[in-house]
Length: 471
Ligand code: SF4
Image (cartoon, rainbow, N blue to C red; front, side, top):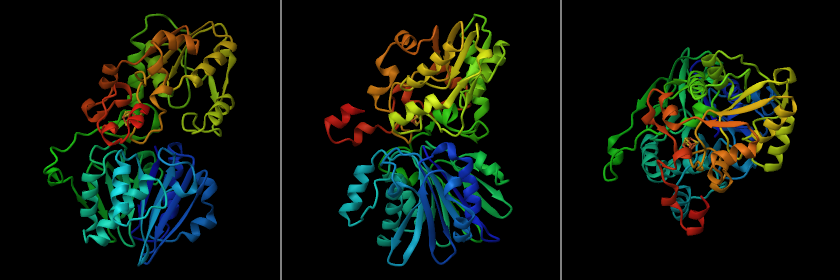
């Protein structure tokens, strides 16, 4: 998971400051590195660094990034390590200079296959990041094969499988596109005559954007100094390769990743979470004293539970917001330290109480185990754990850094073993049919980390049996 943003101004410079604001609102989507590329019509400039948006983009840096259009990125590593060479955006140098840049969100399933093919034709890579692959694919087919950029992107959609929501910047144009199955969200809106783009609508709200809409899977939006037009998904793309694949938006964006004040995939995120909580409440017939979320992503799920039951809802765990998201930290040591530093219980809400604790998901189980111990030490009489998603049994290959199957607790233990491991008095997960009932178009979503039914099977692109065994 990463976050992207773009801004195309038709009136003045200052696009970089707008993109910075949009990235700042999407910091939860990636905390390892951030970058912004701008164009002034003659050449592209870029600044990127490791760390948080606010630390990287000082007023001085923003003033140097002048230009009427900009793209930006916050990164959370999936493919490639957390180093600056893998930070985005990517500028693609050509004989004419640095005139193309790309920022993308997602994970390419057939990365190795496409990279090898390009390398065999003389294309060189400077990183192992998906964004660079997309950018070099487009530039190769535009510069060396003579395709229009929109044609090169359409070819990319046919050839490159997996998840990518992307913005591609040239000296005078901005191209916005999303893979044909629409795994990751991407939205755009207007700010007067200007165009703003972001992974989440909360970032467009902060820019006061209006007419906010989703970029449709497989569509390409072209923004020029005078006009904005759309090249829709072309059925001709699939001639000879069967029908266009169906939409497979990531259900986990609604459960966990996106901010609750975002709108995406035709849903208000907080509303879906509230419905999930109500479904969980319908599984229980005992009287709890208090409902407590594991903040922040489970807040609305817990509220939905409490509202449905008429039980008091309290923010009983106080989160230190400067530690960062637990699941998003790539290293196990950092993750363990984060959990201890991250939450502190308000003891009055727990002492001698029958507590329902609500979380959005369980991945390894280590975090929730520590939290439950913390609640018990705070004096809780009983702790009943409710999870706002089905058990995560399979890894994700579409932009979320879930661990290998071997590390997923639900892949290794029964429900009762998990309950015992985390130390709860009872444990219930959301049923998948109930999750489907919480969204308007259930058939347009990916549920592969629960079901193992992958929309783009990774196996098809792995070369050795060892690789196949590892997933
Ligand atoms: S496998 Fe899970 S996390 Fe990955 S895209 Fe599908 S629903 Fe989202």
